Image (cartoon, rainbow, N blue to C red; front, side, top):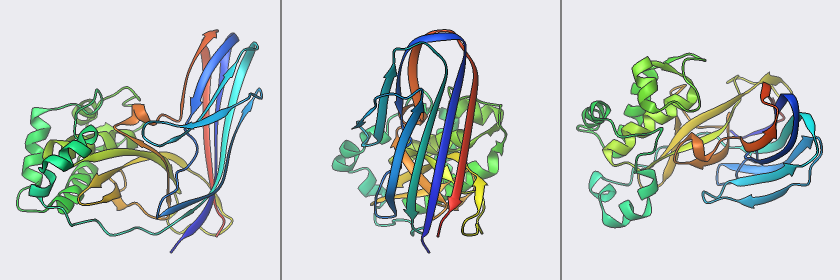
Length: 280
């Protein structure tokens, strides 16, 4: 069953003294594919700016803008209407031998290599070897996601956007970003291409039409086992109509909703609010 949803994502900054110039890029535009259609999207700022859009290396839509007038506050609002589809079945066509083939490794090497937040780790690689025993690649993906769900406790404030998968594993706590990073580490250690997906999650599985909920900026993973498919290790559920995807990359650093630099007063406050309404 498909859903039509409206997402309003607001990010606000306040500064201790006037900022005289800032340069920013925003990833708040959902992507379209076979399970998601973008009906409308706009990104607005206060103070008003002249923005332009481009597509980054990972084919994510980026809105870029800069401000050269002194300001003590900045607000960015991304508004979208999206139609999402129900969860699809895992892709099971690739064997372990196929994943080791030269053309697959070459094509997906960027989703197999370690990054700063998804590094190699001997202890976790051993966990990965155990999880892949006597199962196929798609079953191994589900095994990894469920293992991470069972071994991490959801806890805000224990990690930061700079924390690595190993940091979260050692703390045994984290947020959706950490669940995704730890899953990626295990999958890549097995030789399964895996990528980080950012987006939003409607928090009510039985959401009524016209009901607005406090949504969440969310993260999950996609794995390639003959084709790309997604799974949400934080909630141990397939990616379905409640998931709205925005950007993908190797890890969080490729998909951060807002990136920028500025000169002037330090940021004294950050406010983030996400509202999601099921329209149909």
